[in-house]
Every structure is written in structure tokens, then in C-alpha cells.
Length: 215
Ligand SMILES: O=C(O)C(=O)C[C@H](O)[C@H](O)COP(=O)(O)O
Image (tube, rainbow, N blue to C red):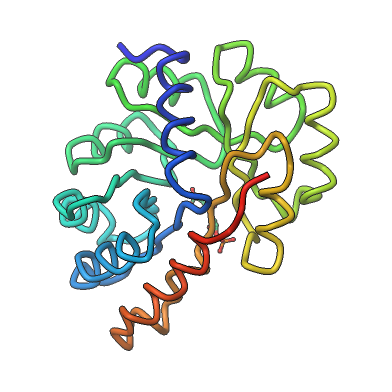
């Protein structure tokens, strides 16, 4: 049984490993190993593979053995997703929102879940259950930096990983907020660079992201 307090501690440790968690949407399992190696080499060890492609579970299986990486599954929506992600070797989960069914499944199966909130009420519901580290999603569409800063005034005990529309253009602003531990984003693994096998280019993007300062 993973308690919400345990999950929060685990989330905090993950979010402190690097300023950016790459959000990976991978169509071709052959990209898994070179991509994970490129990102880890660039200084981004925590990798979120979204369960949005048919290849995703095989990608997690492949990436789980890459040295220095910590691979998790994103887009967890159901208890079945949780079981499949764990079986593939995921060490953490990420979800765009949160439901009791999903939280129950993650707690029962020992998977730390970085659950999403988009409003003060959603954050409060997760906090009431014991989740003090949350994903803020979709960050930019929800009002971005000013919204997250405003939520932090009455709810300072929750820290966030804002995701959705984050890029090198605005990551610094998010990372400067007191209630932000790290950000998530897909920009470090562009589909065209993966298709071209430009792993050195992806390492360079990762290194640039890994160098972002945190406030
Ligand atoms: O599928 C999920 O569970 C997600 O977490 C969605 C991601 O947060 C966004 O896809 C981030 O994507 P970008 O805005 O391109 O950085």
C-alpha cells in the first residue's frame, strides 16, 4: 500500500532530480532506447512516457533498463492503465486529472501518482487526501504563471509540476515560482528529431533544459 504521504515524498524526490520532466509521445518502439539515453545524457533522468500510442507499453519496457533513467507512465486514466504500466516497469505514474478510482488503484498497487489539478477545488481535494505534490494541467491554457502564482497564495502547501504548453520560452517563469518544483514538457523530444534519429540534437535540447535554474 502506497500512502498519499509516501506518493508525495516520491513525487517530490522525482521533481527535484531535474528541472524538466520530458513528456514523451512515442510512435516507434525503436526510438525508445536511443531517446532515453539521449535525454539521460543531457541531464534529464526522469522520463514520462504517455500511454497515448500503441507502442507506449513496449517503450516503457525498453526504457526501464536504460541506466540512470527513471521511467514512468503518463496519461493514466483507469485502474487497468495502472496495472499495465506497472507490468511494463513504470516506477511512477502521471495523470491529467484525478479520480478516486485511479488514486485507489495507484495506492493499492504501490505506484506513486503525480495527479493533475486544474483549479483550487481540485487541488484542495487532492490535498485533503494527502497529495501535496501535484501536476498543474493544462498549465498554459489554465492561466499559466499568474494562475499558479495566485493559487499558491491560499494553498502554499501544494507544490506543482506545471505541464501543458510549457517550453523554453516560459519554463524559467514557472520555475521561478515558490510553488513549482519542476515543469513537464514535450519540447525536448520533437517528433521530427526522433524520426531523423537526431539523438545528439535531443541531448543538446535536454542539456539546455537541464540547465534551467529553479527559484
Ligand atoms: O497525456 C498526458 O497525460 C499528459 O500529461 C499531457 C501532457 O501534459 C501534455 O501533452 C504536454 O504536452 P506539451 O504541451 O506538448 O508539453
